[in-house]
Length: 149
Image (cartoon, rainbow, N blue to C red; front, side):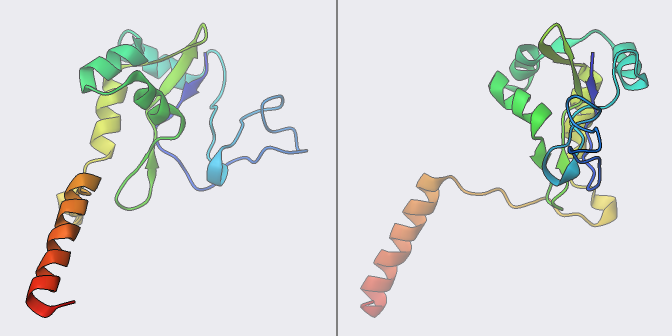
């Protein structure tokens, strides 16, 4: 079992001739972010197992009303917070399947929320393409009618 922690860091081991990477140790992803942390019996696995029973990606997806592929992506790539930091869903692999725990999901969701005490504002929610297109069409019509542009 290989645990994966939720918070990314800017520095980490780089794969290469020094023995790091899949064969020699932790592999790194973009910006040197470790994808693997330790091995079987690692304290991270013990901590996650102590939190409760393992939960599959499909169960988490049902709980959050998203596709299971989205939950898997949160494990591998994470999501970017408003400040640019990436947050990953803590998980580990058991028999070829990714699993996590309910407390890990709660930490993942909480890590994405703005902290009003730190002066963080809620990020603006982007408008869907159809809404943007209608607003753009309306603005064009208004400019044409009022100013002949």
